[in-house]
Length: 105
Image: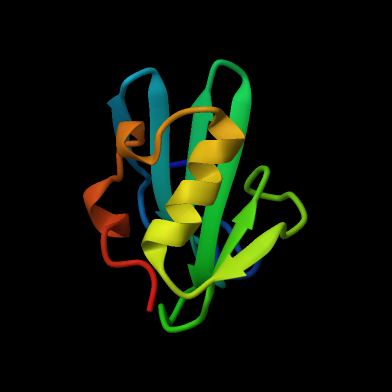
């Protein structure tokens, strides 16, 4: 059973996951060995926003945590707008866990 800590050899999570829920959307934030990852789920739809672990690169929007990159954005608002589109909700309906609120450039 995992305790949410990292095993540096396999690139798994380095910090425990933070979760936020609102308006039928579940948001999860975690850090892996290589990136900061914010994932969303709503009614079977998923979206993810990723940034390098140092936190200075563009944000990548994906259909899922391990999906192919769809687009890159400098700003968090633009990335969140795209994620909301994938979830079929308003950007303002998506919760953001505290650890992810400083993503973007």
